[in-house]
Image (cartoon, rainbow, N blue to C red):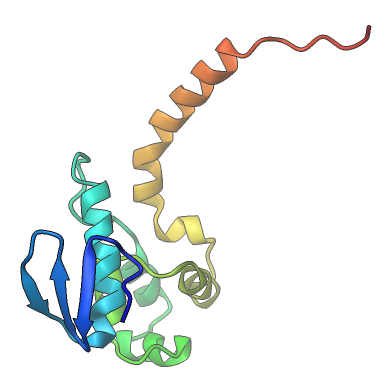
Length: 141
């Protein structure tokens, strides 16, 4: 089986070898979440967040739902994936983010508002720098 991530070589169902040569076994159901989480860990190594902050649990409880019920509604095979999302260990695929937004009756960015806020200041500052250095375009001949 070919891995979508060059750092991880999948040997057979559940077994994979990381780039450093270590051999691990992981349940195939968890493979996507695991790979995604590993990439997020690498990307976030220098940030202050070790887990992806979110408000998924708050919104689920506000709707009065159990993790098992959310998994059943979203047609996810096992409720442990909902737990992983809520604990910030991995991030839902984009389509599942939108499904959660519909289910919880909120905009998708409200589910990850703290994570969004952590980027907001830096992005706004970078935007100002780019716009200040942008040459003005004059209209007309």
